[in-house]
Image (tube, rainbow, N blue to C red; front, side, top):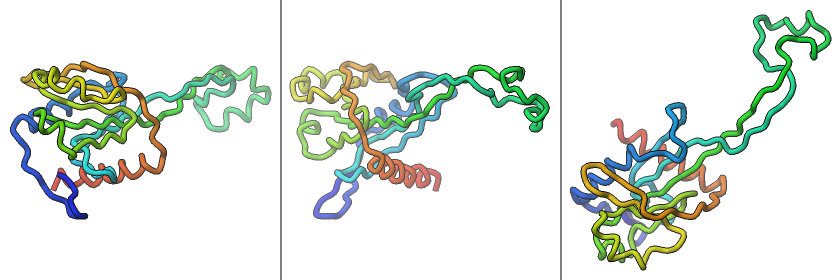
Length: 191
């Protein structure tokens, strides 16, 4: 998709682009864990245009340890029976994690002309990557900005990171807009 004169134009995707998008759905998260929430959407409006794929994942932003009631009590009124908290069997240390949301933008480019076009360079995430066929890397290597990462598509669903990106802060208002626009895509995929 692209925007031209205020109108949204839908472009046909190549078979290769579709294969790369399918591979991105299972691409490894920042911190692998079966307990983490990861959501993604394709062709999401991010204000500057449409990003090919965007992924949101939660991560532990900070951790602190507190001394106090661990909050695990067999009966709610248990605290009333022991007036001195330090003698309570549920007094101790607990770890509190603050959860953040990281957003990753993926722009798929399948040829040098595609890479050089003005469409589809919408890097608005905390992490931003070009995803390209491995054969294309030698042709565009010098054109990739220093802060943008590169993931190579080797075929058969196999992706490998070639170049790491630089973390970029995203303000809460923009993150909310990206989440909202992605949510519209998540819902649309089921109808």
